[in-house]
Amino acid sequence: MFSKSSVQKKSVLILLCLVMLFAVFMNNQSSQAASTDRSHIIIKTTSGSNAQFNGGNYRAVTKAMDSKWNSSNSHRFALRTMWLEVNGKNSQSWIENGFVDGSLNNAYYNGFYCAYGYLNNGTLTYGEYPIIGPSTNNDTTHDYHITYLGSQKYAVVVDGTTYKNFTGFNPGGSYMQLGLETNYSGSTFATTYTSIHKTKNGSGVWANWANGVTDINDQLGTGYTCEFTNHPVTAKYYHP
Amino acid sequence: MMRKTIFSLILVLVLMMVVGVAFAQNFGSDLSDPSNDEFLLKDAPVRLTANEHKFDFDMNDITKDHLLPDTMDKASFIGYTEQAKLPAGAIRTKETILTWGQYESLQSHVTMSSTEIAPKRIIFYVETEYPIYEIKYGSVEDATVSEVWDYETGEFLGFKVTGKPTKNWSGSPDTTQN
Image (cartoon, rainbow over all chains, first blue to last red; front, side):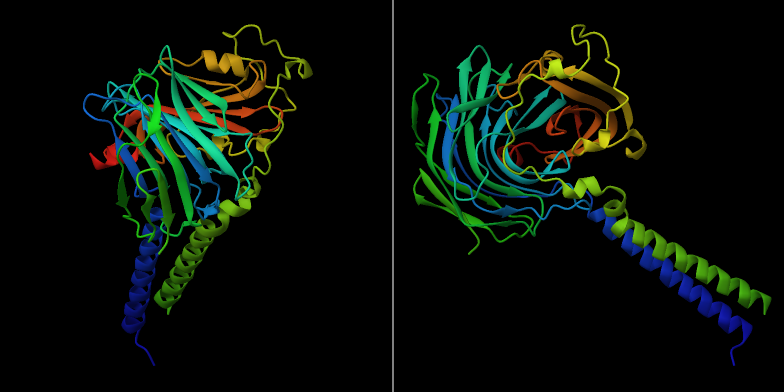
């Protein structure tokens, strides 16, 4: 029915197809590996040229967030946090204080966390730490602070309790940011609000944000957005 | 006839390889490491107060690597990766028992200290060198990663990575904008 050469050609064709399918599959797998693409749905305030921030504060009610973390996608995270620049303006040094679902060093974690990062002569140091103590239940209200204590020491505070100190950072930063971030387009966040947005100036005085803008960079296409509901001290983060 | 048989055999072999690799990619990690999947920090545990009295370790000499107890079950440490399962090129350089206070004193430049973990709390300290390591802000080359767990509960207490950020790295969102 089939000649030898016909069978051989068909076999080679099938083999080629299988190899191509395999290559596509492997490429798909590698593309699911850690990616640096991420979306952030945030608000931010900046200090004036003659001012600096020595602390930041906000209040948030914990709402459901789901990073869709699983052991095959152990890099996924979804978080709501504050980023405060430290160690002087434009220092590329910062501290975070917030709540995360998903990857904490690629293991699953759901709860409060803090992180810090800085560049020193081209070398990056970055650390993440769970904060364990405050209730992680949804619909519980929490106050988050990062504040300069003096002697190059910053405190990470939740509900008035200091959990971590970072020593070695000079005072002063030019920005405070607040909002959602994820590295997976399928992450979900229940509608949430932040309020009591405050910064501490170089004299140690806390005051409401003097200015604030939304900064939405949804490169993953999560569809989430944010807006001020009482500019600049209350904001809403949601999926329209 | 002979050639047809050979081609058929090759075809079957390739099919088996494709199915095998696909299966391993999709399900292998789930089957081989169930501890990864099951972990959930539920309600906050009791504070990690000093527990050195429970263990027969000499914690006085910080310069000495403390031997790991034979009874130590590393699988109980949340997110721990044993040396044999590290990615290609990664090298485990240290695994030791420390107190939290000793761990804090190992840091340099910027140091992190915790008010929720007693200085004499026993921890499991692991250090690994990675050619490249992924954090949420991108890749870090020639990375030294230190990880710590509570020795008693297996709870993950944090990690720190130091290395050279690659081109795809960006810091906090503000850094991304600039």
